[in-house]
Image (cartoon, rainbow, N blue to C red):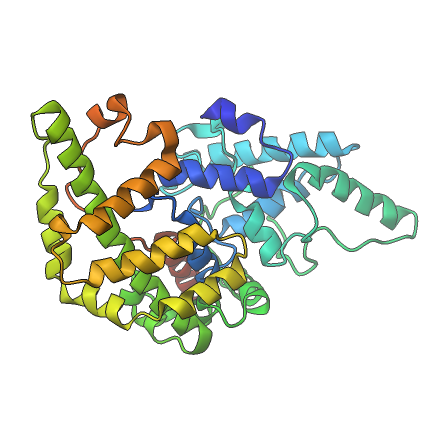
Length: 393
C-alpha cells in the first residue's frame, strides 16, 4: 500500500481519496462489496462536507498551517515544503513527548507514511483556511510567490486565511497543548465552518457542539444531530434509510457467499449468516425506514451532488429496496439473490467471490454487520474537541 500511495502526489484531492479508500478497507462498516460507495460518499459529503475518515482531531486545522508557516524563511518552494514536512514530523515527536493519546503517527511515530497535512488538505481548502486553489504539493511555491509579491509591492491573495490564530513562539518544539483546543482556537474553527458550510448538518452541529454526546453511535441517535431542520434534517433522514438498506444488502450478500462456500467446499464457514438475515428482517425499524423512504427524491438529490452516479447503480438501488420490502423471505428471494450476485460480479470481475475460488476459500463471514454512519465517528470527535475547547477559559 505504501508504494501505491507514494506516487499519488499530482493532486492532493486524488491522493486524499486514495488514502480514504485504503482507510475504508480497514473499517468493516465501509467495505463496498456491491460498488455502491458513490451513494455513501454523496451522503457523507452532503452531511459533513470537508470531513474525512482520516481525521483525528480538530486542532490539526491549526497545527498544519503553523507547520507550513514555521518554514516561511525558506528560499524556494521545494525547500519550504521539505521544512514543513520536517515540522510535521517534529510535531509527532513532540506529541510523543507529551504523551498525547490521539494523533496521527501515534503508532508509527515520525516515520508515518501519511502526514497530517495529507489527511486534512481537503478540509483546509473547503473551510477557507488555505486558499482553495492551492494544492498541497504546490503550497511551497504559492507561499514563496506571496512573499515575493509583498516585497515587490504586488500583493497576492493570501495563501493562508489572514485571521488564522498565531502559532506559539518556537512552534513546533514548544507545543504544549497537544490536540486540546483553546477557547479562541475553537471559536475560530467554529466560525470558519459556519462561514463556509451553511445549511449542512456539520454547520448545525458546530453551532451547538455542547449538545453532542460522546457515545452516540450514529448521527440519527445523537440529540444534537436530530434537532436539525431543513435540508440538513432531510439528508439525515436519507442517511438513516440508506444505512438500513445497506445493512440488509450486506446481510444478503454474506448469506449468499457463505452458502456458495458451503456448496462448493462442504464444510460451512464459521458464522451464522442466516441469523444476520433474520435479525434484519425482524427489526421493524429497518422495514419502516425503507417503507417511508422517498427513493426517487433521494436519487434526485444524490445526482445533483454527484452527476457521475451510474444509471445501473440507480436501477439496482430502486429494485433492491423493493425486494427487501417484499413479503418473500430473504433467504428464499431468488430475484434479490440474482441481483446481488450479478452486481458483485460486475463490480469485482475476476475477483468475485462467486467465481474466484481463492477469494471464496478466504471468506470469513461477519459476526455482525455494523451500520454505515457516514464519517460520524470522526465528526463526533471533532465536535467534542470544539465543545471542550469552547468550555475552556
